[in-house]
Amino acid sequence: AQSVTQLGSHVSVSEGALVLLRCNYSSSVPPYLFWYVQYPNQGLQLLLKYTSAATLVKGINGFEAEFKKSETSFHLTKPSAHMSDAAEYFCAVRLTGGGNKLTFGTGTQLKVEL
Amino acid sequence: DTGVSQNPRHKITKRGQNVTFRCDPISEHNRLYWYRQTLGQGPEFLTYFQNEAQLEKSRLLSDRFSAERPKGSFSTLEIQRTEQGDSAMYLCASSSSTSGGLNTGELFFGEGSRLTVL
Image 1 (cartoon, each protein chain N blue to C red):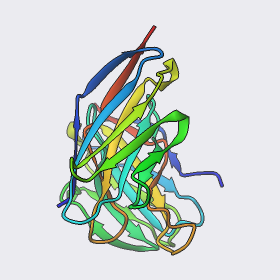
Image 2 (cartoon, rainbow over the protein chains, first blue to last red):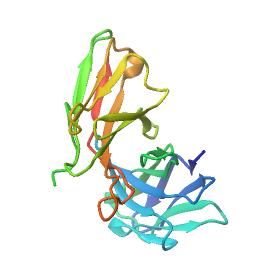
Image 3 (cartoon, rainbow over the protein chains, first blue to last red):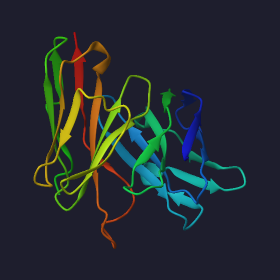
Image 4 (cartoon, each protein chain N blue to C red):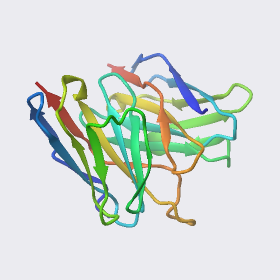
């Protein structure tokens, strides 16, 4: 069965510093992987997705993620954090069996400090 | 494209009451999903529809929960005899199963309906 694990429920960075949010996946088939962002009291917004094309995926708001099969990882990065990046970030993998259902990790709360 | 719309955004109810949430998906999307999210957790899959057919239900969806999508457009999620453990954010999402540009694999989420059971 497919699943994702997010390491670190809380990450704190200084404004302008590198952001690194970790996600490892488990899948018996080539996975489709996603990163979503959630601001307080809002729904989820897609940041980027990996669908077996290029292993380095660029998303919105300057975020990118690299698919590494050897490490079963799909970590999210941003070179320079901005205060507006403070939010909760979820990694997700598409489940087999049809329907485009996604299973989500437990999330990482990103705090950006001055 | 107005996105996925959910209402009400917030609902406070007393234990034992029934509540109903509505979701209007993106109009071109034939698939509709319900997820539940509790504090500090990721969204958990409840059920999904393709057109008007409910194709899958999670074990999380107890007998007190029922979802419908009668005309393959909007959907409702009803919770009967609410319990305090039902307090959560209920998220609706939609996607397309058709080939080509519409089927991009991701789900498009609404802003959610937050339920508080007193």
